[in-house]
Length: 538
Image (cartoon, rainbow, N blue to C red; front, side):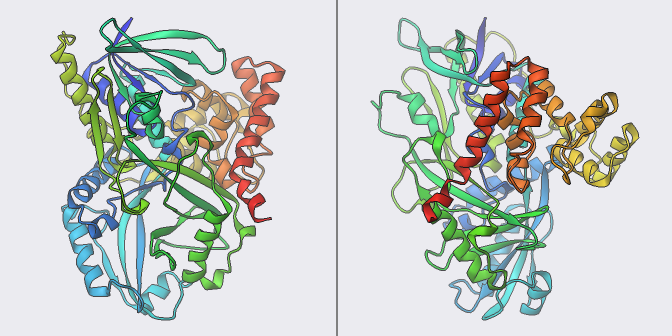
């Protein structure tokens, strides 16, 4: 078989590109060396936003593109993309005063054509403390309350990939590209790939190959480091603390007291997360992790903005670290543009790099446009394509979602299948959207599926079955880190649940006892990597 397009990389851009191409009627395959979203796309700030700080850098076109895409994602994935209020406090020491900030907010709302979830609002100092009583009081002049959106980045990626599959794309996860395949003229015509679990190798042939590998972009383009690097990778770290230690009603925009970088404190159910850092990174993308310095940096900012919380390293439940695949440039890490770039090398390999989570759909459309142009130029496109309409077609969990965005109506459908408590219904609907009904059917059909994964939490064993059979989960880490979020949300990061999940997956996938036990060890190693920073602090 020869595919029209082979996409290397199962992050948000690769998944979005597969979806776009499949909806056009192209024959598509996607390969990913690990799990879907296992790299940068599950380690972002989990926001769908316009990028308010880009206004200060004069990148109006980037902001316009991002706020436009924010509206699209609210429409096609309302179960995953949720409006979130942001408070931007202004203190006497701030370089930008209330008037200038308010003007910036009007520009921000205007660039969205006033289609933000809500129009921004001026808050007096008294109103700020009513909204967020924990904020530092000395020097408070007021704040702006504006709206962007939060998301589950890993699930957004997953559902884009699943929608691609529903429209004919083939997904090959845990499949590593060991070499690009070239014809006699040196043109890239596919890839030799290896299954990470069986070691089996095979060739996938394609008329066009797209490199959408994020931090691995340069390695795929030029494995022998012959070409100058396209990317400048920067590391972003987040930390998670219990909500009761830093209770918030809104996300809070903070400016770090030492380097004036903007970062956020964000409410996240029964947790609060804080981030992000932005520092250059030159190590192995597979081994990126928080350092002790990263954690201290983030806690130092919270000490300034929330002095009464008295957060310490003992409050940090989990961390995550991801890499931004930015286009190479000079200047500080934070000043590097978030614009994307599409390159076609002399061998025909198409590479897309840069960009941000919010604009993935538009990036995907542009790179598939370029691939179609190449197919036409080479005479390889013999069929008529249709419009993809990726801005109108709902993602799988949003099919049948209430037009008024009332999640309780979907929760009622879940209860109609099997009686579940409110917390579990909310968890399932918030995770799967309308597909939560399918998970409920699994629980109704097998009472063991109703067992909780962690005592006192809402996640159920049936979610493991659903992850394996319907969502391409192949490891315990896939389930605990990306299909559920126990890695971040559970007090011990899901370690106690790992043996139960491994035993369930053994029955579903026919693992040996050795593979089952090895999966538990591998998950423990993933958790240990996220805690490695503690050893640096003694």
